[in-house]
Image 1 (cartoon, rainbow, N blue to C red):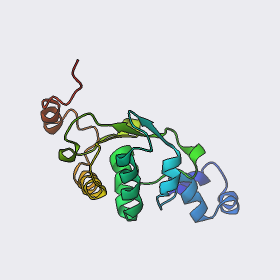
Image 2 (cartoon, rainbow, N blue to C red):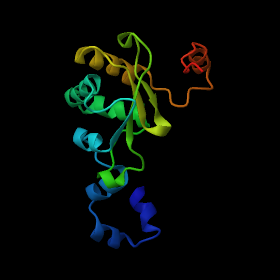
Image 3 (cartoon, one colour):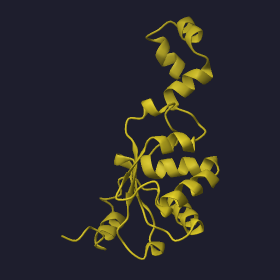
Image 4 (cartoon, rainbow, N blue to C red):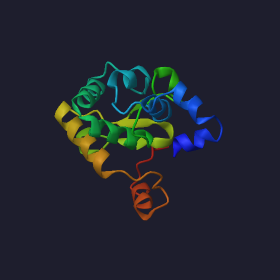
Length: 163
């Protein structure tokens, strides 16, 4: 279907001469395998830094995840399942933010897909990090759920910062 659409702009032979099917897919959709080092290279930190123990636990957990779990983490944090081809192709940087609530081990991470950001609790072990991330990426998949009854109930819990 994509090739047919492009053929309305460029002759079909021109497309075939320029790109193979795999090259066209990579250019349009990105790389299917999640490159953790590429993601780390486009990450910025807010209220924490990459030397923090729990941030190290995050990267260790992500390295240990299989392809499906990494793709699920991207969907959870960005609403996409693939990374762009290179750091220059990112429209926005991934942001890991501090999570102010304690005790951290009792909370799940919070994602903001519009901002490609993750509020990351300072979990006490890498195993807790893995468990909490896995729970979140497999069970907290609603995007833009603020106007739903679940979103309204979550907002009523008072998670906003105190004034």
